[in-house]
Length: 282
Image (tube, rainbow, N blue to C red):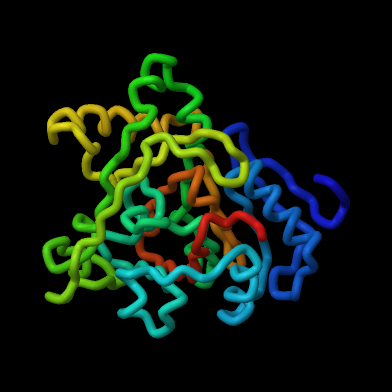
């Protein structure tokens, strides 16, 4: 990094870095925030250990990187619309984030990132895996890159929310399933240029991407199936083991992630705040 304000230690060749020397509960100066942003852009996800932050401090930290994003399928069912409490109880047969996904991509401008804080963490299990979508794109053949350049994918929340998704009866974290719910759908390039780094990355995910503009369902499915599986090949992935007081701050523009449901008899409670906008500093 540019100076000694913080220490950044990469955790794998695919991405991710732990940051030390920062107390997120405090009001951080612009230089420190700039270094965290630089580390996020370089490593795709940054992690902090042994933090003690309440909801107000969590929000204040998030706002240093952009406006808080209100999740359309959680905001109306959470006590605080700016906060999603991600809860898994023993006996749940489903959980939030159980498929490889990028957050909330059905909206016209998906959030730039999210900050997840560990409140009640099981002694084992419940890890989060991330996949570097820069590396996924770069590993494609020149022919495949030419083929998908300029194509747009259809992103929708029809499979994860609403009365027909049938998610709420399987898990403790509830989202909208009322009769007034309506699908949100947007088109996004399959190959996205990151607004800060300028690097190209894949931008499709299993939770929200349902087709490809201009292709038949069968054609789109065949191409998507390949790209989705390719995007989380083991060599592009890295893993975070949670502890109480840990924070994961991921770049939603360059990664996808999955939450493992192997917590067995243990409860898991996390607090998540999403950050809206492209995330480019003013």
